Length: 507
Image (cartoon, rainbow, N blue to C red; front, side, top):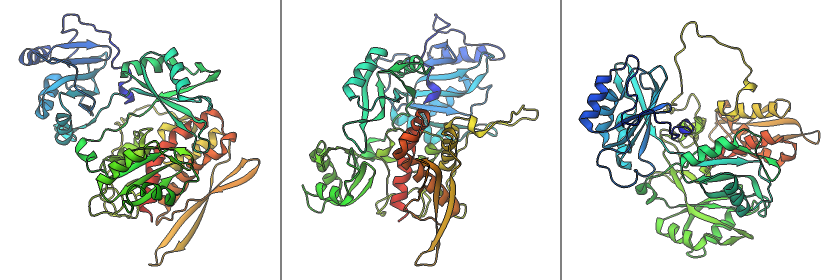
């Protein structure tokens, strides 16, 4: 996560294993008593205070990825002597990192690393929304060290080996480069890549070197940003997956052709196929056939394209849309699916009827999902400055409608025009769809975008139309400036999972 980007850069103030453990009004005696009781050391680093890491008697490497949780909304005057005993309820703490202000107060959040993934998951279950003081509730969720950077504006004729060699020349700790072929021309890349580093620190140092905007590769000024880390799925859940994710398909390849190819090794094994652009989800009736098909079909050619086949990763149904709204869906999220119950034949989200995904839930729908919003207290006398929404970054927007308006403004286009249409379903329901017109988008002519799904509320129809338009703006890439095209490409991946669920549930 971005908040941990510089937290591993060491500038240790205390060399005796204790460091600056107390400033201001903090109770030094309480912290010293905690250290004496537990045997853990404590050091003050640049912007954080570390308790443990490793704990006394620890041998071997640190715990694996997935053992750390993020803790938010901590009272600013609460410290390790109060926090550690609470988090020890879930298991043995390997390391507790409390983010600190120069004033001596904490910054309201911390990272707790346990010795096992099971302990971390237990901490999330029992301590998320825990009332740590009267009226004060903390938030606890999984924390993943980000080791991956998004590199945009790469020449499309460059191959993976060339990009990998170049990134190794200009940055240290490069492990791998992920490059996706163009959906329309498999001999070219999509103009961006993901660079995997050996550690979060290596990725942070690379980002610091590349981020100013003046760094060039092959004469092109590149765009650099954090790639959201891939969400991990527990092994028990993955053992139940019977859906394959198929990448690198031709745009022209049909669902029928994919189903026929995957049925060749065992006729009738495939239940259904859902294809979006150049990737698809192949649903099997049983897991054994899915695993066999994966090994048989990975690397095979369909319509002249060499495909990649993996097991699709189920999405945590309770957190998927919270993550989407907070911009946490990974650049590799198109291989995520919403895991259906045994009784369900189609993916859906928790607490929702099968007509709409939670992201597009209307106000009259039953059991609306609780959206976790990031809020701060608004104190009397707080100075406010009027600004234009167009001066913000695209990451400030959560809806496709706002993104589309933002991109049109950034590209000096007229605002998108929405035209509402309706029809009546067989059971008498009024169904709605918007047509979006963006004047002069190509050669001075008007182009319009209209999704192939109907909705039951205005809000849902407008959001779906905006998502559909954003996903199809790529065909007008010659009219996009580099910055807008880069932002749209990044936003594509946050829409992939949304459109997957829409296409699976709005039928």
